[in-house]
Image 1 (cartoon, rainbow, N blue to C red):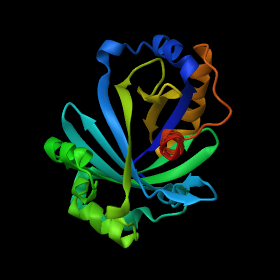
Image 2: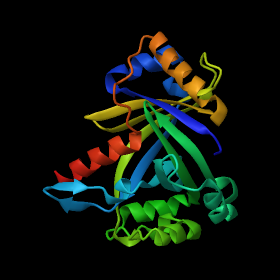
Image 3: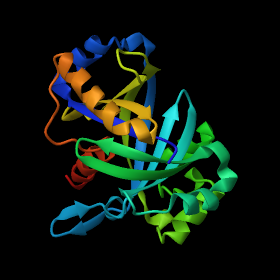
Length: 241
């Protein structure tokens, strides 16, 4: 794998303390908006997330008018062949990667393919009535989605999520720490701290990051979910209401 990304998620009531403790200032944050594409299905009186259940994540972001989309396949270690992924997406160059995704006791593998989106095209998709989402994806992304039997033009777009991103910097650890806050509404806001490390150093780095968070006076929640899962579940429930 290219690397292991190790994450710690903190709840809303600790965000301000964490930003101060690690020296992240609001003036240096990059503002962006995030959307997700899903196929919302009603089942038993609630909205299900069938793509997420398969480990498929379709994300769209906008930063300063520019956009990008990500097609991601994520699952337990051993669920995919890194060599096969590299071969299938080889034409994408640096737009593709496969890496570990660790948070708490959860250890996943994440294979992703990015593509740039013209800002005007993204704006047209967001304001159109029928919300055909295929213009948000590159040819290679669409090919993968068709291979995975995803009904692209039956998807809905969920969001936006308002995000603030701080680039990775030296924050008292051997590895550079990045930070990102996500806010969906008044009911869901959280902060993610993350580092990227080589596979051989991942276990030691994970313990060091968690110890550093505690040393700064912060508490780690017992359950460390991915921010994507938290947000999609919240947005699906909100859509149904």
